[in-house]
Length: 149
Image (cartoon, rainbow, N blue to C red):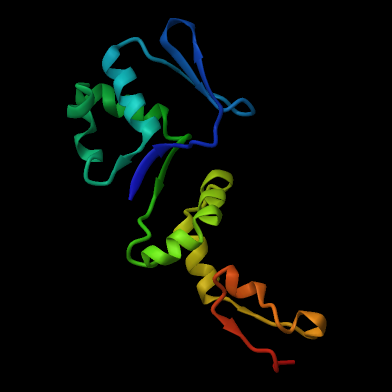
C-alpha cells in the first residue's frame, strides 16, 4: 500500500508557504511550519504503508499537528493497495500504462479495477472479421465464450 497526494491534481505553490491542489475544486493549505512542509513533501512523493505511521518522525512534526494536516489533506490523499498479491511482475510490466492511466484518472484503486476485470466475462454475438484478434484478453478479462448466445 502507498499513501500519496493525488498526482493527477495540479500543484500550485502560492505565496507565504501555501500550496493548492487542483483547480476545479481546489484544496488550499497554508503551511506555516517547516515540519508541515516536510510532511507534505513526503506525501507528494508517496509514502509506503510501513513508513506511513512514522511520517511524523520523518517530517519532525508533532502528532497533533500531523493529525490536523492529514485531516486537511483527506480530500486529496490517496491510498492504493499493492499489486504484489494479485499480479505478477510480468503482468504489472505488461499493463503498466493501463495501471498508470487508472491511477491518474480514477478515484478507484487500480488493483480493484483489475480484479473486477479478471472476474468479468465477455460475450461477443458475432465474431465477423475479429475472430483472430481478441482485445479482451489484452485488458485482463478472464472469461470468453465465443459460442454463447
